Length: 165
Image 1: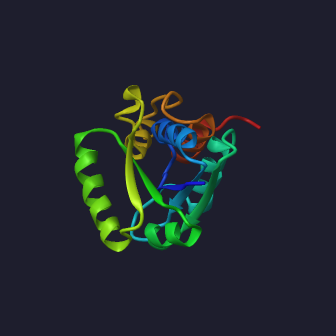
Image 2: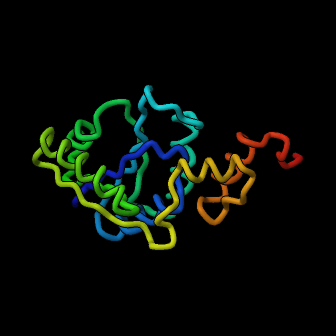
């Protein structure tokens, strides 16, 4: 069984990420979605919140699991016997960055291949940063992310709009 790793900060997970995960779940026996923790990166959500949101979003895929790491993705991939690193690509700008990352990963772990998967075309411009920006501006982001993410963003960025409990 081929194990593939799809890593990112997922701050938060978007419908574009989920498009990549759906494709990967069809292609590989096991997909591990890794929430990468980079202390130098300023994130809105805690690592535990990100892991919980990703787990909720991928629950319908029996061959997809979620983990987190503070270390190098290639080290995690080696440790679990993964042979493929997955990277989502939205467009030309992503392709340049992702190609450089793939080359760095190949230098560190030549036995692990990198595969680029594009999100569905209508999700090409949906990034976590753009999602947070739209939510901060009060826009409805429900078509760009799972409902739990939209609710978390609304609560975090607009606490006055919380639903009464």
